[in-house]
Length: 80
Image (cartoon, rainbow, N blue to C red; front, side, top):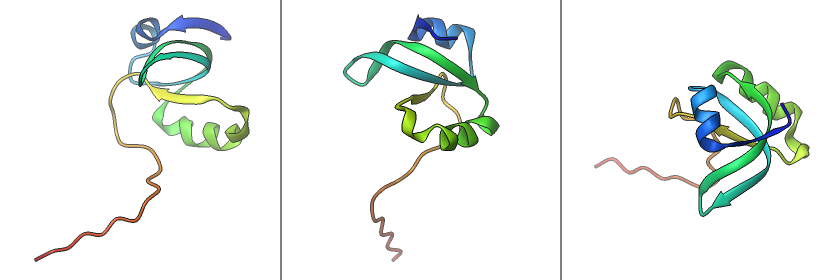
């Protein structure tokens, strides 16, 4: 760990996993590369993120999976 890797490398090496990165290089919303800190499963990521909130890491899933995140807005659903 602690090695700069491209996004393509991360996806290839760690499919269906969460990668924890620092010092990311981005092009718009896309990640070009980042320094790999950790690799976590869906079951491990919440606890890891909670214990490292203030370290400035970014958490990215290499492939699409179940939704995970925080919605910070008011949502109103009307049923007619």
